[in-house]
Image (cartoon, rainbow, N blue to C red; front, side):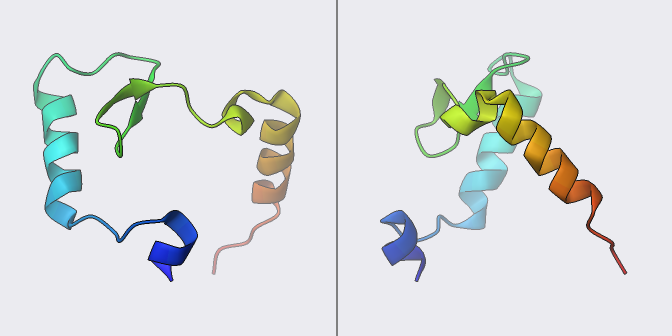
Length: 68
């Protein structure tokens, strides 16, 4: 299912750990920028991340979620 949806299998957990460790413990992190895990470097986020109307809609929908 993941391969069909995303074109690849999920990466092992170690890859995520390594990325987060490197960003936290080295000077690789650039505050305020989007780090693309798949590419391994900073790039532009999905266009929706910059769309204020979509952001407001997401916040509105999220505020209606009740966790139990």
